Length: 119
Image (cartoon, rainbow, N blue to C red; front, side, top):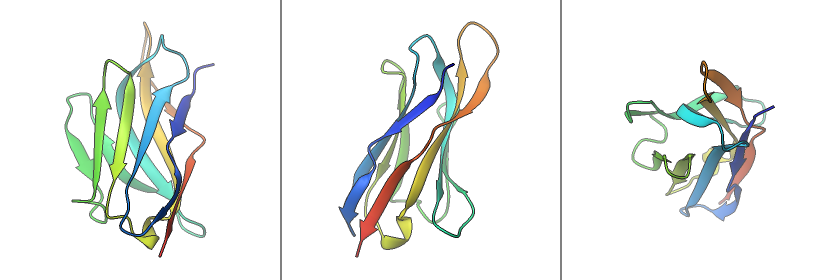
């Protein structure tokens, strides 16, 4: 069964940058739209950024001006470029993608990738 695969997490110093990637596990599926969420220990999962089928984007106030969500249709991948990272950005980051093959679109979650920002 198709799933969403995230990559790019890691340990970075405050003020640094990381880029996360999100792609379907099977190349026969395409991304319609996608969102990045994050969840820190003891906190609820929160929406960080979304990119819609039209290409329009939305961001949480806490990351505006620092994070950029984008897509590369040729690579069938959605990215989250994170810069000026802060310790409060530390969380597991999850991708939720709307995938379709030849039929309807369904929502899929990835297993998450850890981002740790050291101060």
